Length: 313
Ligand code: PMV
Image 1 (cartoon, rainbow, N blue to C red):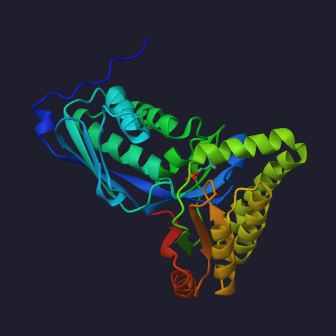
Image 2 (cartoon, rainbow, N blue to C red):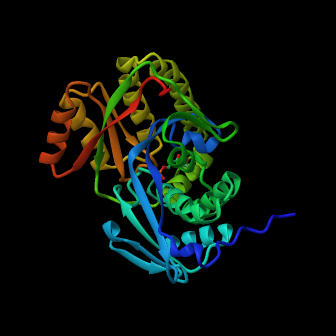
């Protein structure tokens, strides 16, 4: 029997509450993770902060020029409505400070879902399992059948290995490393690209083997990350980008940014997330500023984030 969601009493909703969802980068294993292979990802501190107050279901994300209400028939409105329903929330307004663009391969929808779920859960001390249910309900509206990696990274933060079978497991690394994150500025629908990969694999069985190869690349990456072997990790980024190109999920902008990063001294670079637009990551110790400057000169925004490092006590 399903437990009735806790209902926050009206007087409690007089409080202002907030919650944070991490943005995410997939280091290795996007798309293959949909087929059961492992992926290495990191929840990054560039994410989304949600604030909830007493209201009428208004949803506001100024950075995305988004103003709507949970009664509207749009993916964001339906996803937030699903969170409200799962958590038994009512009479609240939500305002989000989004530091990551929508549809950019950095897990914006999962970060939004996690941030809003956490803010609302503060009113009723919703159990973690119910929060997870709310996040999955929202992610299923955004992405049809997500592997779950975005929701896991957005909730957990830090470096981790994710697979459909085992969920998220934190991955320790002997040292942190700087990642350059570059934005093509082209937004796209993850579900459409995942569907295109499925069609390619169905019609061209040899393409299905590319998925298995991506899994092998990720498994090779476990040790490289754990030992802080960034030379190997950089080369694995390059191999992964080549395999993702074979799955036809790259784009002219992504390829250009990857080549620019390599030219500016990166050890390796690849698209991150679903592709088709969105973002790239580059590993360029000592050259991060040069990579960002090169992208900027070509009209692309970017930032540097640090992932990994010894576990905090
Ligand atoms: O583009 P994003 O941030 O939605 O990342 C999607 C990652 C995929 O592996 C392509 C899809 C998934 O559900 O895992």
